[in-house]
Image (cartoon, rainbow, N blue to C red; front, side, top):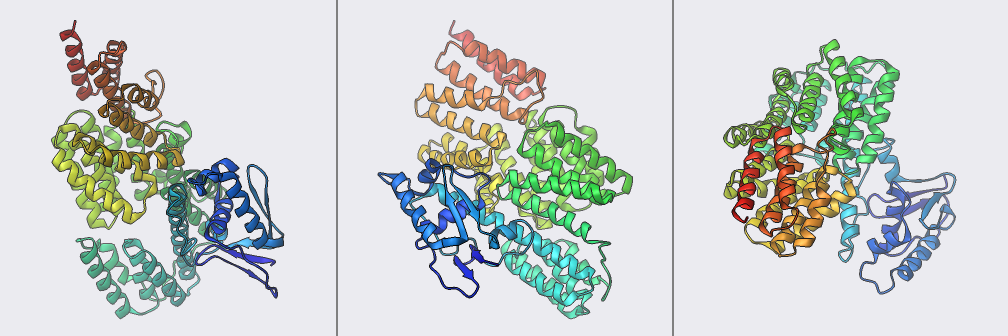
Length: 568
């Protein structure tokens, strides 16, 4: 091996039997990380904007750092061109790439000790990448623990599980792995102590008890087998976990690539249980990050449902039914039967929490705020009890949206504030723009425009990087609201028009409520300022409310129609 380029922990280069220079300066290492982890080679212009936003001559500053990076790398890699490419010499590896490819579990934070406070775009990118690496490490450790237990090496599984709990102590499934590993190693006292420690930690940090799964893991048979019939099963499940993890960290393209691979591996294996798990993970990611009604995603969810029914896998069947219900609810089609199935099949509090959250979306869009609020509060309670903080964030944000729609800003504010704290703690980049956009709308209503502007600027930057159509639309609407409140009507209409999807004759790309909220805001601005397009916009809102069966927005359209009539 020629060299190991270390980007995890304090950056360094390890070479065999040779001492040569290293890149000097935080920006040289930062540039190397961007080149190593980018999905596509970046242009010099984008690198200049990211790393030298305040420089008088960003291009010259970039040339200097590139020169320093080439000097430090020597023959280990070749860097150049526009866009800038990184080509490693034979035998040279980068540790973080090995982690993200599932070849190793990471040890240390990406670019530890490096911060560029004068480069906000880079800092945002770095936070995304650190979360991506962290989640990939967790997935690799979980897979490795399963492999060790399958190979009847519980003592090594215990060591890995302790490391996993230390890295993410509020993840309940990690405690379950530790307890079961201790039990299978014959250390029942240690397993019970781990249960007690988990309960104490959850009470102190979350104010809830762990679910019964933690205590039940003590009953794992000592020396018992959890044998994976062959390494392909382990590899497929590792790809599923890694795909979901990197998607949650905000790298949807990476996540989809890993999940496509998981589907191929599962199909080659021919195990219908693993196929069901792979298809539901892939389908859910497509409909949440590409487009709500994307055919490939919906087909994958239906395939997963059919496989799970055939094998009796209730957990996967519940997930598939819930995600199909989410698609139907978002598109304002009948979802009642799918939601009933998801409820009946829910195998734990976490799955029931998620199903209640989907039910509540339909109720909010129908103007049934009390019923929606009851379900969402129950969803939060169940997610808290299950130790699944991301589900808590999801339902809290929907509660805040319901409060906004119902005219209850006080309740919406308390929910949004807790969601902001939790989404930051969980480093859930993929959901962050929604939380920030809802919080910003509350700020706009309270005339805290500077705070709203900061939140929406961050949300928009993240949504652009995620390329998520839902978050781009929601954040674009928020920026339109802000511009309107600031008195810049032309800017408001530009933002709102870019956020609105005129797809009444096509399957919707985003949830119908997002489009309805956006055209509703267009009508409000257009009728308030007597724009020539006002009447046509109200007609469009009326059509969408009728087509999508959304009485809340039908009532809003009547209000705008009356406003127009009063001025004629």
